[in-house]
Image (cartoon, rainbow, N blue to C red; front, side, top):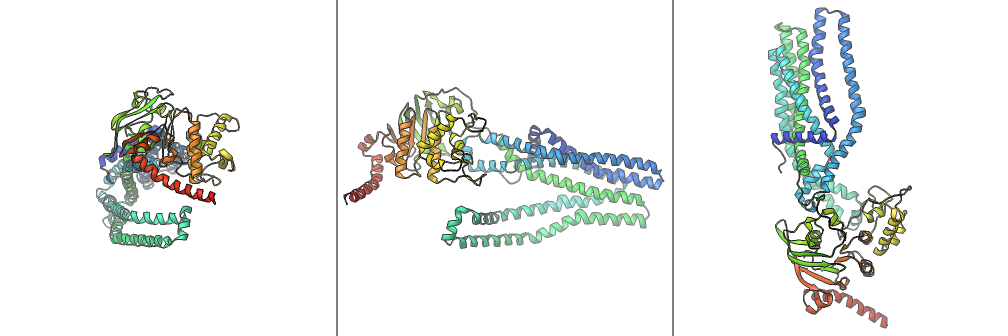
Length: 617
């Protein structure tokens, strides 16, 4: 997408933002319009009606009492207007801004959790999503405000032009100066600023990165053990030099056009109008002092009205691209929406079959004519080199993606016919790219909110015991109980300085606990022991095997010794099954699996020989 959008699209996007804001807070839309209308009314009233009445009354010798009545009514009206301003700024905005924030982010987050996983793995889509999320409430509010600024600014400008033309035909020519200044030179200044900022962007990113790295604890050791600080310092100096060169490149041009903008917008109109009025009033005697005062005051108001009108137009185009991202994201039609309805799959899995399944990601084939079956209470292993398609198979299994060819069958039916959430609820997973959330250990294991709490806010005993059992099976219970609040301890220090920071292996065990605690028929363990030592790995696989006898188990592992007891092993190569069978059957085939196992076993055999020699001594 280009960095600029057309006028038509900018207008349509502004109307779209009005609709969104109206859905969230109709009051904000109404008050934004009223605030702009009243603001322009004040400018025009003081410069046109108020000044005309006062000066004409003084010249005509109007009775003082009548003038005071007019001034009193005017003061009362503006006291009410100021009370309205106070209400808006002191009560309405502080109360409505959190609602707007919640409203727009609820829409975005609801959409974010409903789009398919592919969207988050698509860098172009993800970049636009993050741009849509960034300060959404502020930009949406600015867009609504700028819309009314354009509408009422245009009306106020037309009124001001007609009024000044009626007072003095020639005075209308002076309005050309701020028009040229705002719509001509100011636009050039904006384009220069945009180009300069665009060229400064990579240097700013470098400076920001260096500044950030210097304060981050995860980089502290390398900074002290290596000479990387000098390298970072060199990158920093290069970026600063680049920023200076870019600034120098645009300095003269920016200075000239900014000078023209200021003079055309302010100096020429004010000084020119005063000179013109002084000539007509004092030399040609064709203009009265009252008219001079009115025209001068009106010229000041008109100039600021034009500036506000121009700034509103600029803001509309500035936020137009953001609204484009927001609109595209909110109106995106999901391929696999998370709220997809369908048949109830029940709570049992008798068989799950991949039948001639193929899958291509960005036109690159990842899975090719894959056939495999998982049956009730079976233990299965997916093995193979990196890139063989193991993790992709699990994503297809969980319907993060749909096959581009073939079909996946649950109990004989295409999984696409089932209610998606109920279907996924049949599975428990422990992924290798695990993540902990800044929540308690309890919440990190349960990962759901459908449990009851007692008066003290603690989970009911059954849930606490289930979580404790899951932590014991994964081998991290003893560690968790050393933490200040046990399973109620907050993990990470994102929001709590006393939060616990776990090691890689401990983190992996927490993730594995999630699969242990969930009651479901199908459990997937994706490299569950990659961060564990051999003893902990052995114990973990023993616990998985012994405590998941009534489940379909699927292991993904590079360590073939840990899956040798599987009922069936699928060896994957180039996105398809190249060998399958039990460990003994595959070893007897003397194929790729046997070769991989023997190569891995040599390391263990070497260790065993060392241990045997040690025992002999």
